[in-house]
Structure formats: structure tokens, C-alpha cells
Image (cartoon, rainbow, N blue to C red):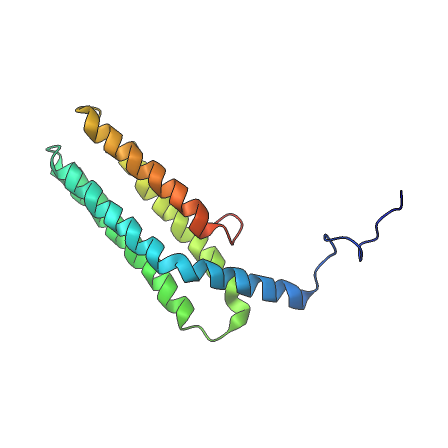
Length: 149
């Protein structure tokens, strides 16, 4: 059995140019799906807000929906700025902005499942769980190109 050298291995270290190209391609793939991700997330927020209005606790529902709208606008601004950025060396920074936007969106959806959780009637709690699980599952596909996104 012979020892593999770094040049034989698929794990050979990348040069700076290859790392920049990889980051650029990862960001391009991430942002290719980002508009639909933002739009579908907001559709879910509207549906969740409609469900929250039926609970009788409109004040907290309006506060959560205002947060959901702010998150959507922030993530849309990230996408718009990325599409208008001419410097391809900023791909790593754009990926970090997306990660930050995803953290905020995660907090938004966590609030729906905790602070705004309505245990009765059961269909409301099931609706909330299905919405959250669906967005987590969908996010795995759209955010896969960038680690930690």
C-alpha cells in the first residue's frame, strides 16, 4: 500500500485563486435561489399571521409580522446589493450577510414556535409545527452551497 501525496489526493490544499473562485461560485449558487427563498418565506409569514389573527392575540401577532416583514426587507436588500456588486472578491462577505440574515429569520420563526405558540385548538399548533418544519427542510436545499448558511 503506497502513501498518497497531497497532489494525488482530492484534499490537496487550494491556492488563493481557487479559493476565491470557489467562494464566488458558492455565493452565485446561494444567491440564485435566494429570491424564491425570500418570497416563499414571506408567504409562510402571511399565512402564519392570518392564523395568529384568529387566536385573539392580535398585538403579538402584529409585532411578529412586523418582524417578519423587516427580515424579508433586510434579506431582499442583501440580495439586491449582491446583484449590483461588481467586485467578485466580495463573495465571502456576501455569504456572511446571508448567514446573518438567516440567523435573524431563524429567530423570527423560533418566536412563532415559542412566544406565539398556541396550544389550543390543536390544528393551530399543528399548523405552526408544519410551517416551521417545512421552512427548515426547504432551507437545507437552498442554503447548501455555503457552509453554516
